[in-house]
Length: 369
Image (cartoon, rainbow, N blue to C red; front, side, top):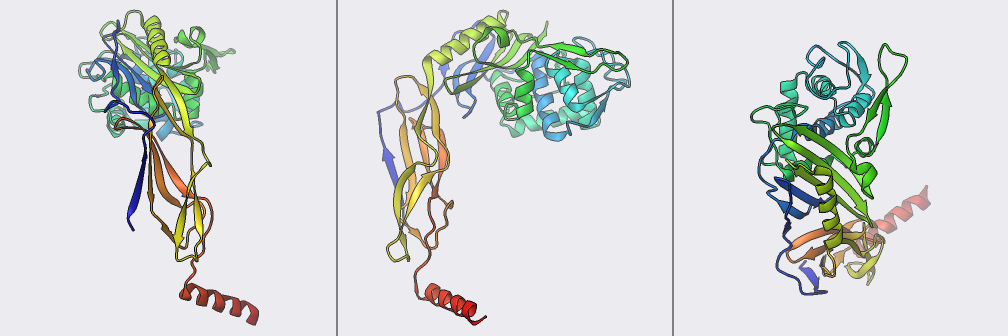
């Protein structure tokens, strides 16, 4: 059966859809579309650099993927008194994994990072190997984790692009999104009659419209580092600045540029009938072809994408409603912005001698009972 490729050119576009190089005060930066992962703005996005406590985005991601949120996590000897930012865990103190994650991401607790690492990985070293491996699985080609918290260590580095990939994956977890968008939280404080109060260090949550998180970081070696995000008018973005003195202002400026230059558009909606296809061996029946999701993408403003429909010329019975029969894609140049499977909208039974005879026998057996 030959495939029919229908190409609808809505507007002539440039051959590619590469990200725009942007001027920035950061040593490296990137802004991506959260939905597709497409890079919108960048500068030195693939240059390896230290990343301070933004490391903890990966620590949290692994904990969410590998751990039980209700499980008790105990602060051991290695976690107690870790230098830098802390939630002041006592040795032997126990919190749930979920409570530790709040301490990790809101107060940037280095002690919580080590406690989580030992809980999930058995040791800090094994957990860091897990971090690096998981990053590679996400497509990070220039990332090595040697600590779960980001305190300076030779050979511990990432890139703005890799860190954005990690944050994008983390943001698929509802609890992660909840934690990193929380400005102020409370968790128990063992041995005291009051809770720990955790204040999020990310000022964008209170100053930038639509801010969604994500994580601050600072050491003298790494400078000020920030992973951030926002949502406006259906467009969700994630950004990273590494070694950026005016981190919050620069992150806000870069997001303003992205929202000014790009927009989210929906070309076709979920459930919409794209076309009908003839069905062979069905006595002339047809099947409607429906979108299984919205065909949505982020594109430069005042530019319309192309739509590419990949379907066979016909289907062969039997066909079941919901059966995937093709795909529709939104493109800018050669870049696929969104791809949505196409499904059959109705059942079509096979109509030939064998199927008729089978139906006859089945009906006969029912009547003979």
